[in-house]
Structures are given as structure tokens and as C-alpha cells.
Length: 294
Image 1 (cartoon, one colour):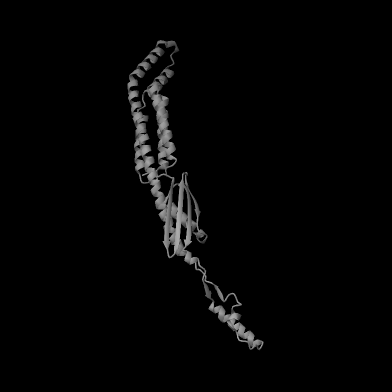
Image 2 (cartoon, helix red, strand yellow; image 1 turned 90 degrees about the vertical axis):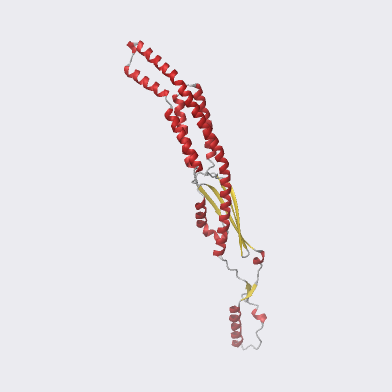
């Protein structure tokens, strides 16, 4: 099954009044390129996020954004008494009172002069909990992204299969025309050899031998047609393979193109030349589609 490199995925995870959300976008790229944006508390986890993504994706330019939000109630500031500070300052004031022989009683107003007595509750950042929450959101986003890439890949596969089958049909037509042309080409070959033999004074035996070999080779394109059909079979098998197949398919297209060029060079038939042009057009369309396959 082939996968497109274009897609979008969103994922969310909620626990204990906190919500993590992840958005991931993917477009074409020859390699796997990652751009990751994390909450400031988790920036140091970027390498871990890369490992998570690399386990699921092989190619594509990936943009991943992760946000971490707390429930509104958790943001409300609450004040707490710093009991240790109260005891410390109360002792200091008592010592001061004794040292200067003050009779005035120490009151709450005196203690409140020290800002450390009452302070906002310190929020403990539960890093591991937040990290696991973000991981869940990222994995959900990846699942949705991969699903979208697979759906688009299925549509691309249908188009590729149609085009590669069209190419095989044209190759079969070329084989048929070539077989029909063989008697004519042989007749032309005999005529050319006879022409050379008639002019014995101008005969160059080596040149004659090379000419016969060259013309005989032009008669046979069987080998090229067989290789194209073999590449076509492997092309279809690769499309159905669960492994990433973009690079393999590109290689096969290059090989088919090489064989078609050879057929065009060997043949001096207008019909075959036209068919090779049509095959090259199909190959170019396939190559364009393959740019978006993982």
C-alpha cells in the first residue's frame, strides 16, 4: 500500500484538568524533515518527539505543533501561609523587642510587613504527566495523518496502475507491429546486401559484416519489451507492498524509460515511434505522481 506524503492530523488528550493538543502537517520532500514546536516546559524533549515521528514516517516535510493548556480553575491564584517564615520573623521580632526593651506586643500587623509571610501557592510542574499527555496527543495526530496519507495514496495507486497498464498495452502493440515488420525488414536487409555485393570493387568485407549485424539487431526489440513487462510486474508488486515504495517506483520508471528509448532508437517504423512517444508521456505523468509518494 502506497502512502501520499501530503496530509494533516490532529490529536487531543485530557487528564486532571489539563489538555494537550497536537497538529501535524506533511508535504512532499525527498527526505524526512522535521519542524517541531513544543510548550516551553517541554522544549528539551524535542529529540524524543523526533524519535516518535521517525518510527511512523519515512519521508516528508513535517510540521508538528504541540500545545498544553490547563483548566481555567487551575490558573486561579491561591494564597498560602508560609508557616516557617511566620515562625522565623516572629522570633526575630521577639529578639528585637527584648534587645531594645520594648513592651509593645507583637501583632499580626507587624508580621504582615514581611511579604514572605503570605505568598501565591507554588504550582508544581508535573513534567512527566504533561509529557505523557503530549505523547498521547502526538500519537493520535500521527494516526490521523497516516490515515489521510493512506487514503490519498489509494487514489494515487489507482491512477498509477491505470497508467502502467496502459504502457503495457502499448508495448504489446509495439511487439505486434515489430513482428509484422520483420519480413519487410529482412527483405530490405537482403536488398541492401545484394546492392553491396553487386558493386564488388567497392565492397569492404568488414563494413559489410558490421552492416548486416547492425541491421539484424534493429529487427529485434524482444529483449526490451520483455524487460519492460518485467519492470511493470515489479512496479505493481511494489505498489501493493506495505513498505515505503516511492524511491523504488522512481527507479523502475527510469528503467522503463531507458528501454523505451532503446526501442525508439532501434525502430525506423513511424507507428512504433508514435507509441514510444505516448509511453514517455505516461511515464512523465507517473513520475509527477511519484513525487508525492512516501
